[in-house]
Length: 506
Length: 121
Image (cartoon, rainbow over all chains, first blue to last red):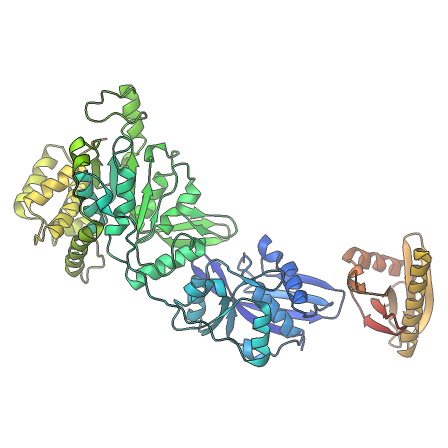
């Protein structure tokens, strides 16, 4: 038989499709054709597979080799099909028996000497394989940790083609090393105790972590904006396993495990530089659609420092994912949806020179420059920011204090408690965060107390807030109520929320 | 000197291929038919009545790859043009024909292996 097939997985975004790799070896001149819409990296697989086979002592069939990746209409990219192609080729060449490769998914890139290199997207690929009913997978050893998250599958890590071949021929293989798959709880390398002073910004960060409210920090350089933003994940509750799997799947696709462990339960934080492009922010790409910063920040924090310096349009491209909690990217090869439920943290200087705070004595900007600078944050985007905090330069009193500020662990305790209250309250409603309460529910089931409502109505009447602003304030009010263990938001909660939202009028 | 050697190797390979064809009941019609566009190594008429135009590749080692790898797609097409030329000049235009390739590997001890690929186009 000069016909054989193996299984692998093609990814389009996070959606995987089982791909059947068929190899036919026919009489004719030595040639190799690869069918099934391969991209450049995949077309080069021929040379990698050939070199790896020859260097492992296998013979290359000097005949007409046809490799077909089916379904043929699905564009395929990347080097992860190397191993599947190689095994199918050897099987078609009668070098290995077919019985052990049935119902096994092969994933991995071949080095020229036969070593198997890591690839991106192993976890989402295995999820798709599992959904399709495959229960065994051969993966590169370097991807073993993330692959092991699929408990319901037998994962066979392999580091060399020779080892796969000896397993397929003799049925014997080294037992996979058991790896410690403990989910890692919050890492405490960063701590809020490091932040000097800034009580208002600390409070705002706590509220943001509690209710998922987006936050803008404005202040002169050196006041701790970045420090505070970087520490917001440390006060967020640990992700649950389902959330962590979503995060790991996206990071697997982006290949960012160098900075984040696949088994981390800490909320991710992504801080793209302000020169980032729109595609890098929301995701995209022509051949393989990759997740952008806002998807890498899924279930975590997207922190944009120096927000007004962003090119026009980049920040506004976040408006849709902020609303929907996901982002759909349409390209010629297909539509891809990535999750994008993140907490947006913006930091900005008050003016181009950065000194326009307090009395602004040292500021060298003209009043028009000052106005134009923060005006770059568009109205529709700012409307989605519930907490706007002004940070003042740290005073000598704050610096002189020897007792540290509150630690992340202490704040996190309060946030977790408030979170539990909110989750219990919204049981059965289809949302879990205060920032997600629909406006209609805010006027009926989840109305703040009477005095608070009349305060809000007065503000509305005198045109100091808009109708949308009213709802936003009520949502922040609920987070404050949860933190203060009030059953419903009191007048005080609502007034505080109002203060936090309108602290800076743009 | 090397060139003469290669020519000798080539001629020897063609001789082996001819013997192989005869052994497989084909009638050798012409050898080394040469026109300006190129050369056909062997023209044979098979028992089935199909003309076979045979390209012979001879190697004394596979250090530079398998002999048949030396036949590129362009070369195979040129052979088809030559075949049509032969048929036209011999009044057989329209006859059924095929392009074959033979790899002859010569071992240092004087033995040889032959690999015959029929209908390569």
